[in-house]
Image (cartoon, rainbow, N blue to C red; front, side):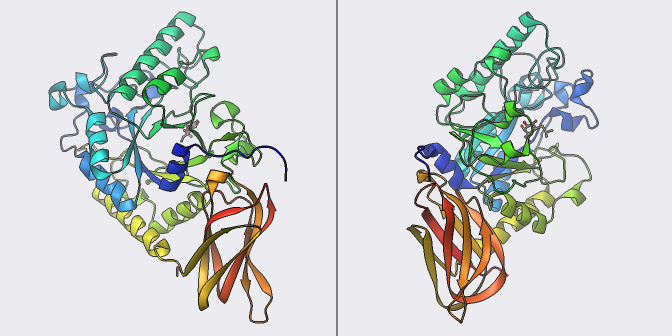
Length: 432
Ligand code: IPT
């Protein structure tokens, strides 16, 4: 145990952890020009191609609800540079399309549906790439090479105004997403922290520029799998830190609360709709594995939806979200028994000799991630304890499947901790 103060999440980060599941929505003009690559830096899809004729964002939110997502993040501007709101900034967006006579605003529809469904809205608008403006990672003009200060300043100024539009028009946003992060101002990046502070002080920010409050981080892959252990604390986000696995795993003694979010497409490796890929939708068993490897490892799972050119989430995908949501509820709606408490050892009576095959542990993260190593043990008939599972990080939630065991009682034994463990919930389940 050390005398360092224990790092804790902000109030909004606590809310974010409790949500556990979010739905990502990838939709952009390139789905109307299959095969086009924004990095060709030519032949941009003409705005008129954008015709989501049956657009119904309520149907999108039905998908989120069926899965059990409590927040949703819409791609408002992806790498193409096409703006899916009524922007005044440049002539490439919904305003230039004949869809809804140039009056359509996908962001407005999306946020309204989120509010109607009680799902917290979030918006993705990356500043690291823009096909229309010739910008590429890490957010530099000249296709990522930079080298033109005046042009870079114009781009950065435009980004700031873009975010001002997006963050000021649609009410409170729960999450703001920077794909690939945003380079710091000193390196030619946009000055976004004051704009966030002005319009969205409470937003959770994925890969915000260094110094952004309420930041969350990437886990290093788009497969829905967090490393284990995966601490919420770290010293810097992945955006500027490169790709070392140890950064993705966080650091138990990190100074910043910056938990991991696992973003993953539902169609293997495809974020955007493509025709004839219903056979690539992950089966429920794989989605459940992802859930265990994300929510079950102290992260949130942001599962993607890819509405098609008609503006609807395809039926086959809809069915899968519902199936996935049902399976999670089936597994974890009812515990055999649960308890909470403080201290190095916490016992859980199972109300008789019961069969169990899963344990779920949650720390009271308002007091930090205190547990550094633990074992869960079951009482045997001879009165001794048998180790059922072990681990390091618990944090918001740890889910572990066990070989089925019959026992009257289990206990959580903390082997190492930063300070007295505070367990919000220790629960046992019989899932299979
Ligand atoms: C990748 C970015 O490099 C990373 O910073 C993060 O934003 C991630 O996307 C989110 O999925 S790029 C991707 C092609 C791996």
